[in-house]
Image (cartoon, rainbow, N blue to C red; front, side, top):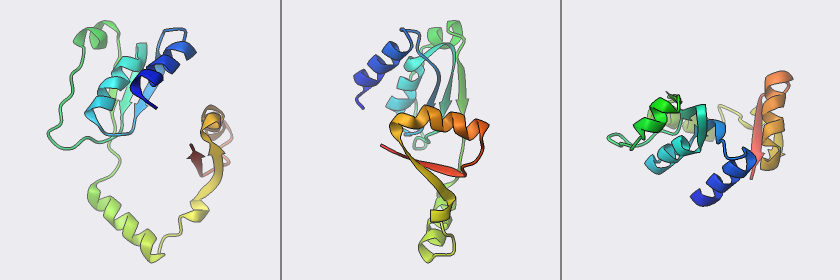
Length: 129
């Protein structure tokens, strides 16, 4: 989805308030900055996608401070962790197919997240665009 389309959708779906929570998982400085523009006053932005070393972003201190935003970073794994995991998957020592317990379309994502929090019946759900 293009940037202007995403902001239009968020604005329309939230009556112009912005999203309660924005999770950035791409790892580009542009998407990190865009996440901060999409969140509502008092909202939370989780910057999950790792940018390359030395990357900087521009942040509106006015929006961050007066908008009372919560800005979080989360680190998931190192490049070496990925190498080891992919090697184990490729060799067959880890079978990943049984880990995906359900496949659902992107349009059902809110229902999937609610189900994962309440029912806890699925291990991993593949979201199909």
